[in-house]
Length: 107
Image (cartoon, rainbow, N blue to C red):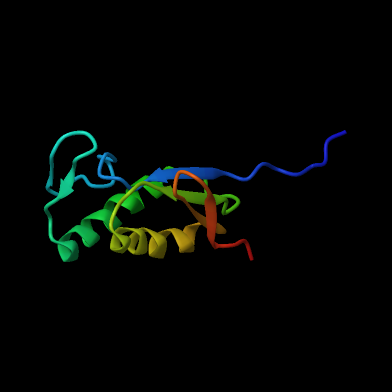
């Protein structure tokens, strides 16, 4: 028997510098796991926010769902992404490779 519950959408977003869509327009140098963001944070934050809005336009918006933030990156990048994500998702979590921590639980 079906419970009638709908599966909620879960998006996993890699915030590492390997995510070319998120950092498009920023100056990133290096190779593979040794990448460095050379764009100053005040400029990069505006670029990242714009890119993130384009990425989130592709996400179904019928139920709120959850976004899981991953990747090694400076804290300020998480803050920029969190600010945009908290408006769009019911739940925001961060996964450090070992465990998932809820930053914004479901209301």
